[in-house]
Length: 72
Image (cartoon, rainbow, N blue to C red; front, side, top):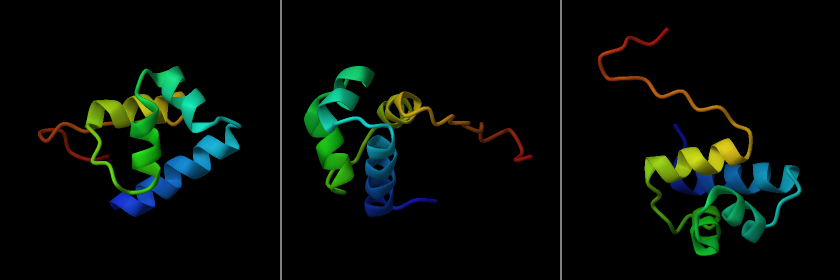
């Protein structure tokens, strides 16, 4: 499990590897640029749906498990 600062660093690294600015990523996934900026700085608590959009925009597949579904 990633904590907030680690998550921000992870997002920043992926964004830079993709050659995107914070503004480009924000526009691509439909969030405000401050969401990306604050997330990368560890200041923002992000909704799961927003995080999934950001990760999808960076070509990271996200699998969410149901609480009733056992882990593989």
